[in-house]
Length: 258
Image (cartoon, rainbow, N blue to C red; front, side, top):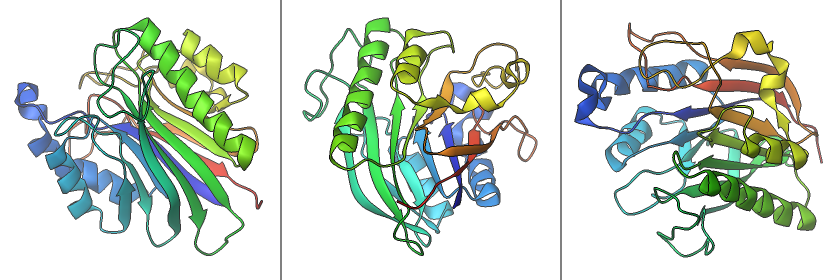
């Protein structure tokens, strides 16, 4: 089964972005998702009003997730409700007490969370998978490393009971030579960027400037039982504007029956 998946930091709604603020971008973001129709995608930096706009503009999708703290950002997972269903969902905090809301550890500058879901295809109940969507801290190296260790730990706990194809995605706020990436590789996960010429993939954060040179900070990693068919960093404008200060990352993958 071929699946289209994506991760996208949509950039929070702040008036300091001036002409790039959310009210001027939101219809272009919705247009992008409606055009590419990923089966499932992870988002970061989504505030309450932005969540409402996405829900209203994407009627074919349901979502899972909560804010990291009331009225703050959330990492929501949207999925095509007609094609897949969610069997399990939770949000945990990237802290020493992951199920205590608003908890912070590891010198993290911000509260950080991960949204998790287990999904099954409606027309083939033998195809199931798990997805973790996170946004690591942008300041603390310790928080980045310990945060991804916790995500990997949760993945392993699930797979010890019921092994399933797994996707870890999000805004990791680290370059591709970072310890975070090394830990994901050591956990047996595959960086989808390996299927792009390293000279071609470049950066995913561009600050509305459209630049490409550098390293990505947004990633999609998959377990070895997922076949990577294609990977794209979407750098085009929509309606003559960049739809975020990050480029969306889209992957096409193949899942086998369990």
